[in-house]
Image (cartoon, rainbow, N blue to C red; front, side, top):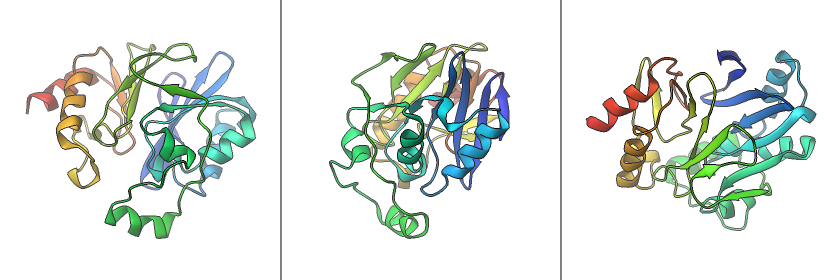
Length: 222
């Protein structure tokens, strides 16, 4: 685990990141990593001198297993509010069978499939969350219900999920093979490029810790 800005920590879980945010009354998680890896989140909480019981909310960017894998375990242990977009909710709760690509079917044999989890707060569009300081931004493309989250701290911290990926000091598109709708994904990058934020963190790739919105504008202009 490493601190990106004050109170925002990046947790490495094999090839994906989850993020831990310290707030006034506990912590907020943005995504939860792979199935059967919730111990990595618990270890990160311990390093931050917190426990699972301190989790107040779990913000899910989208339904893919590498982002929702620990959600059920952590939700059960904490009683935290789970938040996701309406278009991805049926896949997160298990009401619908996930439309796995061939690559996802192969990787699921290695990583396992996530346990379904209830969603307590369903997002229909953009706007503030019940958790103070966070705003949800619907960024479809990678999945139909993909959401990025903007935290009002340190000039703005964007939790981009898989709407884009970090590449050193730059930002790149998520690989086409893992994107449900490439045109929508590009439009989402363009939307994010219109926002104001200093820092961006990603499900995959390193954080951009300065002038991050400019890097999104560069990507949108390509």
